[in-house]
Amino acid sequence: MLYPARWTHRHLDLLAEAATTTAPVIATAAPILPDHDLWDLWPIQDEDGSTSVIGGQELWMALSAPATGHPEERHDQARIRLLAHRDDKWEDLGNAFADGAAPGSREWSGSAVRRPDGTVSVYYTAAGRRGEARPTYRQSVIEARAALIADAGRIALRPDAEHREVLRPDGRMYLPTEKGDGVPGLSKEEGDGALGLSKEEGDGAPGRIRAFRDPGWFRDPADGRDHLLVAASTAGEDGFTGAIALAEPRAGTWSLLPPLLVAEGINHELERPHVIVHDSRYYLFFSTQRHTFHPAGRAPTGLYGFAAPSLTGPYEPLNGSGLVIQNPARQPDQAYAWLVLPDLQVVSFANYRSAQGVDLRSAGAAQARAGFGGTIAPMLKLTIDAMTTSVIPGG
Image (cartoon, rainbow, N blue to C red; front, side, top):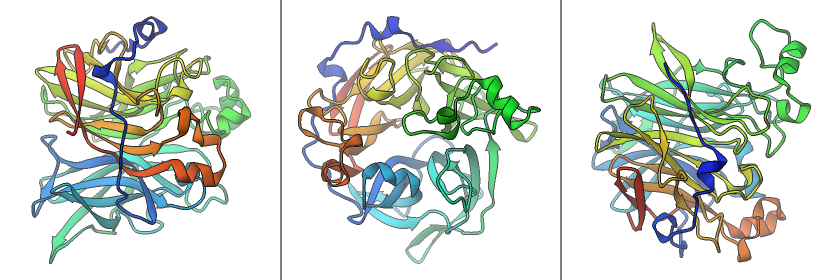
């Protein structure tokens, strides 16, 4: 039986700023695409977990949007971009999918694995609905399995892949992300009422968006089975119901399991969950921001992690508190969306830089744009000794 670990205020009481868990100030972060923002980077993996390489180039994906207007508006235009990486240089390979192929109005974060038959399973979040007049916040987990084209110096995904919904919240363990998508077997009004959704919560008002997104693929070396980890919200009454869901394949489909981790009462967004295995332990990592804690600012924006002897737990927080990497106090929002690779390198994107840590999310468009990185941040490296971690610049 899977019993979720609980991240609590008792753990956060142990949190203290230290050099071992603090990233250096980002001096420079060169734009990869001058006319586009890039964020939420992930590699295309081979089935052994390593980064897939073609012709000496690593294959990666990231979210992208035109670099115009307020940076927070990028989420309403997000597309998945295909990238190549070699010798510290990045090459843009264009949008991963054809226009209109995704079932949502935007494409949000996920993961990807290259299969032995030459196809790539891209697991991602379809946000909203295709063709909607205004952005809504319905989130569903999609698999697009596309053939990889690599000839005459061209690398691309075939545009004829089927985009298939493979997971959605069940309304019982996990809260729906849009009003009316609620409890199976109940009407829209009955389902919203049963879940206690206010209009703002159900419709996805900024800062209160429920989560069912960021599918992270993982193959458990203990049994060779694929799994998906999903940033989710538990169907509880508290306004802070962040969780990490787990799904496993059963009879040719994906089946939701109880969460690996819940943060009920302390945080509502445990984003981009992923697992690596190191020295026979399972390390579960996720990112979250200072304003999603209860109360806001209770802990810093950062990468957090737990460890366990098996994929299903029991998980305990790394470094006592769970904090693995935080932004420096004088630049509390400089980077986000950290991803730990199997070799313990850590990638992220350059977010907001501001004087005295001003929160630029609510600043005017010009001020926010001037402070926004919108590109890949300098690589970091972790060292891990059982339940203790340290961060090293220049991974």
